[in-house]
Image (tube, rainbow, N blue to C red; front, top):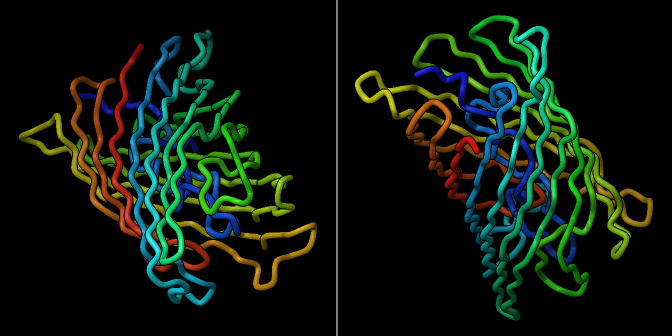
Length: 303
């Protein structure tokens, strides 16, 4: 079973951050789907093909960390549930088959809940649309795939700065994606997917989140006696590169989000282009944001 038909839906930003739903202070919120790109992120569908991807995510946290990594709140529970659909198309063209071009679009929605000693609030609705007008993938050798792409995340749905929980961040992001997928043997796959998020200002609050770098990674092994299954380890490393700003001035302390997550994942291939994935990621080394766990179910199939 050739891994080259598994396509790049796990690279692109389409859900929420590690704390998928932004809080009123906008601390720890992000448009980035931390940990989504843990399986073959550098591979596009075959030329002329359309591929559908689906994502379901549950994130939970009972700890909000400050800039020193210490717990800054007591008796707080955050829960979010997100769903997204994404379609990717690779252009049908003549020329070098080792270079391909594609386009992708995603619609995301979800529900967020926050519970403290003094309040309990939940909200659901649409979250964002992510449009990638251009992906470029390149195979310098049969075992190595490289990808880059750029796009825009557009917030949709209702937002109220007075609410403790919002499903949408209420600001747009320009995104620059990269992906590398390497097959050192027929059974092993090693991938890394760095992305950079350049955020606009939230006009309702005057707040602007700093530039964020997130690198998803995955190491996956196909079981020789059960070739439809892959076992692996996935996760992400997240670092905010610039300070948050309020009304054009840097926020004291910068409020730079930082976290690492890692966990197991299991993939089942029905055929080379149709598969499902389950994974669990546990966050650690968290600063300026929630610390929690995420459970993922993902699928892909040609349409």
